[in-house]
Picture (spheres, helix red, strand yellow):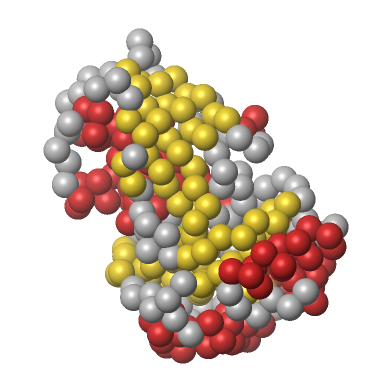
Length: 311
Ligand code: C5P
């Protein structure tokens, strides 16, 4: 086989309920993942040594060495299946915002894993691939499976969810990324500062919202919008992301003013996600957000989207 290409989708967290800080430095989550139709493409081909190249917007901000999660995916798979040195050229064509809170790095890792698996014919099963994904990062298992799922634990223990229709989103991409660990730290800091405490013994266990799961399952856009905005936002990291990047408040307000049914920060940000009534509404909303000058770019994308797919 000369090369294998895999297409892999971005995600938005329609709910991100964050529990207290655990002794291992992670947080227990109730993480409702929804894959959205914004894609990176990962191509692997045999080479004399492991090599990574990246193209697309902000490609220069993606590490092109062994710290790239896609390279680590190839290394872990090779080690587990006795492939020897993972001598492949991994090319990542990016369309998912870099460090944007949309699991772009996780998507590339899942894509590289599926592509190398096909190239090398390891015969790995879904369970083995998911195990490797969980070792790579909390969001990587979801990038492999796509659709919609509830993630418990760090977010890696997945239960698939039904989605009863298509939801239309607009994503407002900011200039520059936010570091996920920094946003979690800021969430802990804000909790401690408020007197509520940040540790797992002080913060209630995170639970998925029944109203949100019902709305997803029924394809009810108005119900989903109201669940997204319940208590201000369904994303417990939103206040932390806005605290680190105050201009996100302007982006969220611009979307609301332009008629978004719901406006939230996507994951750890800084990308903001806006729910629209339908595809036409999303196109108009994207235009209005772009014109507002509160984001670098705004793109419309439907959900759900499939998991990592061999092309
Ligand atoms: O699992 P992943 O490598 O994506 O996590 C990156 C960082 O995000 C972790 O090192 C941790 O600081 C934070 N994190 C967390 N709780 C989670 C997931 C991530 O605190 N459930």
